[in-house]
Image (tube, rainbow, N blue to C red; front, top):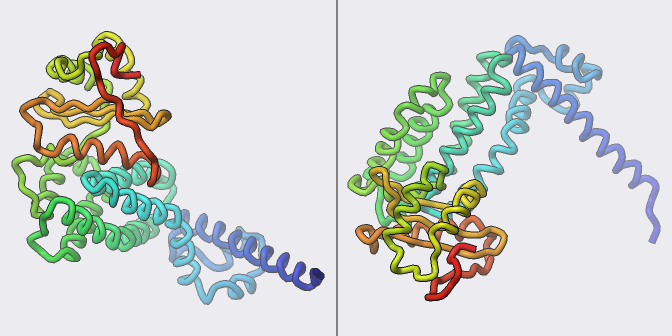
Length: 319
């Protein structure tokens, strides 16, 4: 086969053009963040990019288009993450709303720490509006996912429910005074449940939570209460290993009134569900199902999982 020299040069030219356009976008982002849209000139962008002004108009019609491309570039990674959260939520429906807004909280905090002090207010507002536009279709999907899972329908149209979530919860997270949102997070969650048409009496028992170190004592209390169901379990050995498993993110719980109502351990390395217990009063309420769904969703689709059972004479149920 012959490789035509012209194709190679064209490839190098295309790569060079892509690199130069990226350099201009990087320069434009820096200028917009610092000076704002109105305070940024094409001349300032190209001076920072180290290129002639005419090259700007080779890639962009005007400053407005460059600003839109900067926003697209800025949000590309976030959009990938939002899509992944929703895709994951189809496997773990009970947590998808929680995971989506928790991601927004984390990334908003990182964004403020990195950019806020040196960012022009007009660009900050533009980013906020772009974020709300971006998240609305994902929240629309989440409304549908959770409506199907729980067998409920919002009292308003799903697309309107998504609007309320976007401009209600989403705006609260993005607001500069986010401390007020943080202080009222529990009430916000109640509002989301009402908006989704969910019954309120067992609201806290719909979403498994990752276990924390402070859960060890109530976890062991739960273990002791169901001890007869696990004849091979050594409580001392179990507790000695529990802290590490929690630190490794391999433990999920349902909390209630200072106690644990249900708990699950799994092993990422061995692809096993190691331990599942539900306090007798909460059995047949779906807690075990939600814990198993949540643990299984931490593995790639198609992963075969083993389930560890306890038998009389087993040295320990937690390996």
